[in-house]
Amino acid sequence: MSPDRLLAALADARDQPDGAAKMADLDRIVAYADAAGDVRVGVAARLVLVEVKQRVEPWRMLPAVQWCLAAADRTPGVLDPVEIVRLRRHHRTAVAALCGTSRIGLTRTGAALDGLERRLGSAGQSRRPVYALRCRIADHIGAEATARRWLARWRAAPVDDSGGCADCEAADQARLLVGWGCWTEALEIVAPLLAGTYRCPDQPERALGTIQLAYLRLGRYDEAGDAHVRAYRRHRRERDGLPFLADHLRFCALAGHHGRGLEILARHLPALDQPYDEASALEFAAAGALLCRLAGADGFARYPVHRPGYAQRHAADLSVAALGAELTATAEDLAGRFDARNGTGHQSGRIAGWLAERRPPGAALRPLPADPPPDDEWRPPDDEWVVADPEAATPRIGQEPWMDPELVRETDAQSMTDAQRGTHAQRGPDAGTASSVERRCDDRPRRSAR
Image: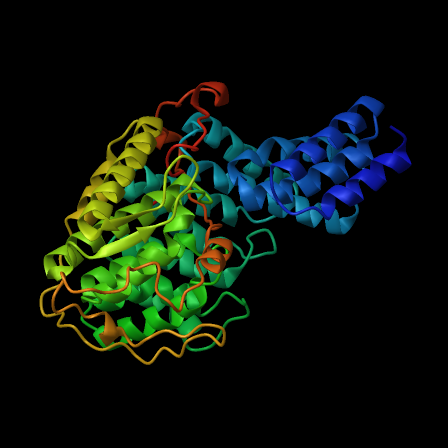
């Protein structure tokens, strides 16, 4: 295939919607370019492929990113300055994505992280993103003391353009602190964001979603409710909102807003069939199971929730109790897979702790702030979800007359985030090579591994 035809094919592929067909076409273009020795087209096609995989299967990004980096090393000038910046950003994202899946062992993840650190050092850039990833990975495997040391280095490291968004970094640090029970410190970190000092378009909602449980644990119930409503108003429509939904479900479960929580759970259930990563699916399933348990005890146990069909599974109306059992099994399975990869029992223990949570003492049910519906959707007030008689005829959650199931599936079935591993001293046994651990998730569900 001539260079002109390759470029034309690449332009056509770039315009296709994300999916298997687009990736197959890009793979063919890459193969033709490599066979012809056309490094420039090979790099250009891989950069498009990397961006598609980032939205679809982020844990598969790294090989293409590494090829482009090696090509840039061998052939200076093959990338323009804008592409170099994009490639460095993709390198950080690709390494971060590895811990969101149980398919890749920690030894390989650690090697990828070492490679990122070497490149940052050789470019004279701050190692801040490496410290952030080591902190997250240490937390993910249960090495909290190590994670705290990496957090201190992360916060102390120089800030430059290698570290990504400073506002999102603050929210990520707060998320770690909330998980460790350091609720006041978490609020202090995001205080500037909540005061309006931010430049990131994802703020302040990302910070609010992160600290809604901190407010709840501190007894600041009105602020918790306000944080939940404001953040979910945005997260419900965002393609990458799945990693934040677990916090919203846990808030509704622990604050007693079970009707609203079940509505949120039903709306986003399709995302569990094709999630951005296993880590987000794990937390969503565990939070949903907690909600179902507490809602069941509050009179919702036999309330019907509609679960759309997917692959060989038929659409069905499940009771809250039955859905809770399914979500519990999903969460325990995913936690077990991560623990097998990590060589620890931390994720199973963490999820067991979530499933056993109860409403904080003194957390009486309080009304949530007004939540005006989007222009294209009408929603009833929360009190219409209070069930006095669970046997009474009521609309199924997930098939409310004001909801368009196709729109819900289209907008909510794609979501994401990352999480990582800690120091060399804390590395667990490798889970094996990619060929031995890669598993498709067509028959079960696949943010953020904490």
